[in-house]
Image (cartoon, rainbow, N blue to C red):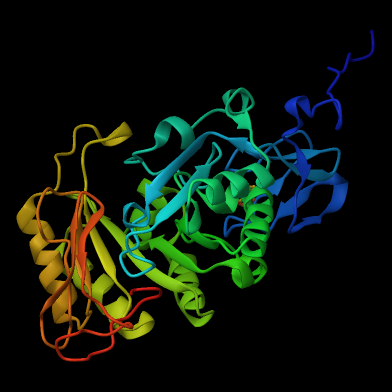
Length: 357
Ligand code: SF4
């Protein structure tokens, strides 16, 4: 019997085509060259030659590598309101970037073409943009902040971290737009460089997180509290999907959690769902449902509740004390910002946020 012929597997650095691989942070070595990644709450155990759930972190001979260091798949200059962040330097620009891949597999993902891709396809995607280039592009284009966004910053953390450190050195702010599934270890590491975050609260039922999203609820709730405690400016987004998370009781649970555990100052963005990816057959969210969710948020005591993804004038910031309109927005632009020194000019109440005017 001839001996088994083993397929030749390329090792690092020969595998590092294009220079997108870098040894990962936050992992531990296990027996038999297995690895545990400690970047997100999945804490994947990865066998040699395999990658984690996010498909961008690979075990090569007992070492963990990211495949997306500098692999920019998207770069845009966005209004900060588009993140959405309504209480963080309103009217400024955020240099927004991402790599392919994600640690969630939301069946309703709007960005599935860059987040839900095969291991092989990821290796063909993106162009090499160094952290220095991201920061210099942001400065050159007059941005106040850099947004680590579109897919999930946790899965391109090594790249994101280097960008964040350089951004602070250059006087730029860092924003995470995230699903909130990172580990405490990762939050501790990025915390000193993180200025603001918009975190998705995609449902308030663990079953939904497991069946539709590919994760679990508790780590997200824990991280929301942790981010708030760290002093990072926090806003929360919930995409309301018919038949998935639009039950009034579930919406009330979300609102109560926010008011009781995060505080009534945290803005809540209730976002309209439109059919996408594996949920093309689900209709767009009815406006009545969004209005009911908005009312539920205010009833819970939240001071700032916004309806997003709709053509309406509902995205104005009102003074929670006297009710005067303070910021008028249109299509992610600011029409008027009346806030003075962080206060309502009418009644003098403090308005929550950072760099409000
Ligand atoms: S980032 Fe999360 S999904 Fe990716 S390998 Fe690490 S633990 Fe797994």
